[in-house]
Length: 480
Image (cartoon, rainbow, N blue to C red; front, side, top):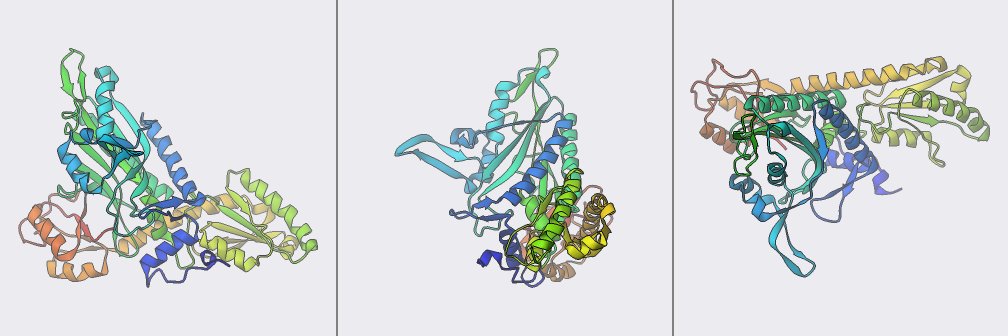
């Protein structure tokens, strides 16, 4: 038996970081690549990403967004056109300097993000108001160096993501697009991954470099650390001016366009692992599970096998006819107990157990992964598996909401905040809006402003740090 096959050896509660890494590797979602900072997606990990991709593409298409493709190499001279933006990414850029033994001349950056490349092209593609709005999404990899310690899905030098870039005639239209995308992100993460999120704006200090403002969705993980789940940026004309993204209006008067950009990455998979996993391994929400139901036939001899397998095949076909993703575990030489543990490690939402005695009773045993509950279903009740999967999806979100609520506190006293931040969590705390206070809080506690929730402005409270009138009640937390 290989080391990979051994179960989780640490508790989620006792060593969250090691537990997480073991789940990723032993549930066979990903593995480390030979190059530091990089990981390899295995088929189950890729399947979850493809499931999210399909959902996002469907929702983007309804909003008039189409997919395109951008190359990974960007000339240094192009990046330099937007100095402020480029300076923000400069420490993280990988550079290509040679082709074989020949120098390439103008250094080529491996894409840290695609604004500069996309907008150079947009300036060619857009001539008049008839070309707008332009809404394109790109499924890309991005590469950013300076990874001190690789954490699969959460912190890697190369990651999968989508980045959308839209261009609009008016500011109002662009700002509406920012919010539409944020809503798509929120709904998808909550409905597909069963993870509750809080949406709002980033502070000026934490916003995307080059944006007028950044909207974000944040979630609190079971270890008390915050995770940024996705961002949607209003770029104003900050990029259209240096990149000359202009259009002629109906009177043939030229204007700079208004722009947005937005993205989520495979960090969402990391969030799903942390939010739902347990000491037995992965726990998958049914909607994204590569295998939703696994059937484990149980028999000791050929007679039992001949009795059980025809019924297993029948059940498999019935479930597949209802668009349920099913696997049958017929691996030889492995005990039922080993198979149960293996599928629990992989997080399959439902396991069906069926042996000769079950055939006699005309029933199956249904084991739910998320709460380890077992129930019996008669053969004529197999279709109930559909509603059970729906129930599991719903309950996983509700459980995550409870967990998130328990990890969220209202606080206004700075001394109390300093002591409680050690335990982790989301802290709703009043803030005056001044950069000095934000920086001091970060310096003294390691916590930053994760999100200023919509509707948290205009408070009567006093800033927890300086005691002046607060402008809002952001969520402070330490984050990934």
